Structure formats: structure tokens, C-alpha cells
Image 1 (cartoon, rainbow, N blue to C red):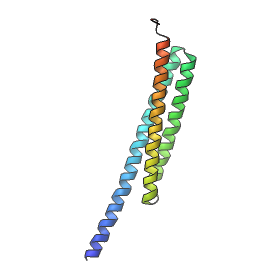
Image 2 (tube, rainbow, N blue to C red; image 1 turned 90 degrees about the vertical axis):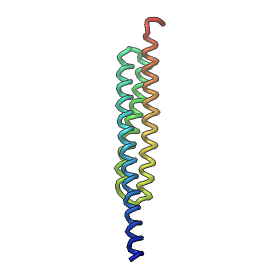
Image 3 (cartoon, rainbow, N blue to C red; image 1 turned 180 degrees about the vertical axis):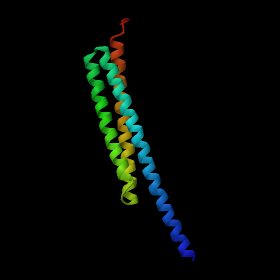
Image 4 (tube, rainbow, N blue to C red; image 1 turned 90 degrees about the horizontal axis):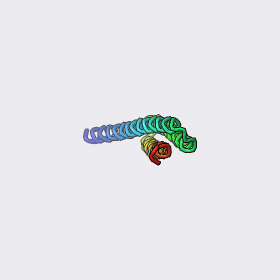
Amino acid sequence: MSINKTLLALAMGFALAACSNADRAQDSAADAAENAADAQADATAAAATGDAAAADAAQAAADAAAMAADSAATAAADASTGDMENNADAADAAADAADAADQAGQAAENAADSADANNDPVN
């Protein structure tokens, strides 16, 4: 009976770890999507200033954030299927993609800030 309980505990532990990876991947994908939306808003704001160079840079960053968000979503979907090792790898990939989306979002924000500063009447 002791072996059965041990095996059951192991199975439950593996199931919990798999759920944890999927949850982590889903959270990363949600963060990436939010960063991509923010980056697009920054690109729109940069375009409204009329500074074409800053607007182009912000849009390129927003596009990169959107691609990273797509990658995070794909990795999150992968994290809910397959074996535990692949799930962990997919969760890590989703987190990496979320980080990339965050960095691209920061670049879009910087470009929008630059566009705003370039169009400030004080300058």
C-alpha cells in the first residue's frame, strides 16, 4: 500500500508541475499581449506628433512587440500539451517572448517620448 501512495503522490506532483508551467506560460502570454497593446498605443501617439522618424521607429518597435506576443501565445499553447520537460521549455520560451515584448514596448515608448519632445514648442 505504501508504494501505491508514493506513486500517487508522484503522479500528483507531476500534474501540479505541468499545471504550474502552463499557468506561467499563460501569464507570460498575457503580459506580452499587454505590452504589445501598449507599444501600439505609443506608436499611434508618436504618429500623431508628425515626427515621421520617431513614428516609424515606434511602429517598428510595436510590430516587434506584436510578434513577440504571438510567439508567447504559441509557446503558452505548447506548454499545455506534451511531456513535462517540453512544457517547462515552452513556459520558458513564453517568458522569454514576454521579455522581448516588454523591451520592444519600452523602445516604442522611448520613440514616442522622443517624438513628443521634438514637437515641444519650448525646444
